[in-house]
Amino acid sequence: MENRQGLILVNTGNGKGKTTAALGLGVRAWGQGFKVLVVQFIKGNWKYGELKTAESLGPNFVIRQMGEGFVRNAKDDDKEAHRLVAKEALQEARQELLSEKWDMIILDEINYAIKFGILSLEAVLELLEAKPDAVHLVLTGRDARPEIIDKADLVTEMKEIKHPYKKGIKAQKGIEF
Ligand code: ATP
Ligand code: MG
Image (tube, rainbow, N blue to C red; front, side, top):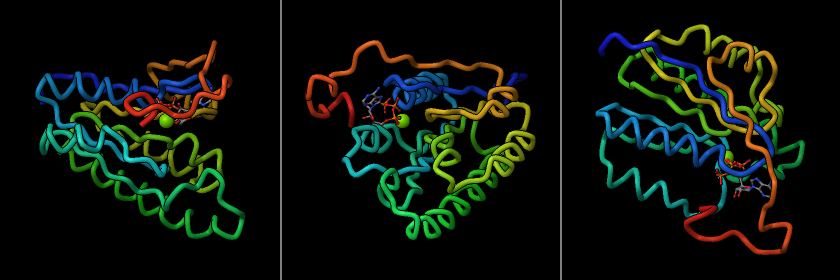
């Protein structure tokens, strides 16, 4: 790796664009020859276009989906299973981070996983402490905890001005998934 200052970046807020902006960064970095790993902590039930994108970008742009189905609406008794999976995902993310195989790692929806109560804030803060200097680490998800914002170098809050959901327009291919 060149002499690089690896940053901690956070995309948070209620407006749309946190994950898409992180993927955009990943694509930019890939174009610079970086190896990019995306770990998705919460899996939706859509066929996300970016999974196909990653396939065609090859081994330097990898997306791993870790979530147990769509946990946004999980009941309390499902949460224990989600906790286990999220914990394993974080452990794997940590291993990948420390391996220095990757120039950029995107932890998608990790803030939401904390908020939802399936990942502990402490474990994530510990991961941030362990970040090798040269790796760029991106964390997405609404309601980023102040402790995480405090550790970050770059924080962007997406603010909703308008969203088509409010007009009853359903999720659009290529925009939402
Ligand atoms: P995207 O993946 O499109 O960049 P996001 O990562 O900012 O969105 P999430 O919190 O991950 O947003 O929400 C996932 C889904 O919820 C997306 O399909 C997104 O369009 C939708 N969404 C995001 N913000 C809003 C909003 N303010 N109102 C309604 N739906 C939203
Ligand atoms: Mg998202």
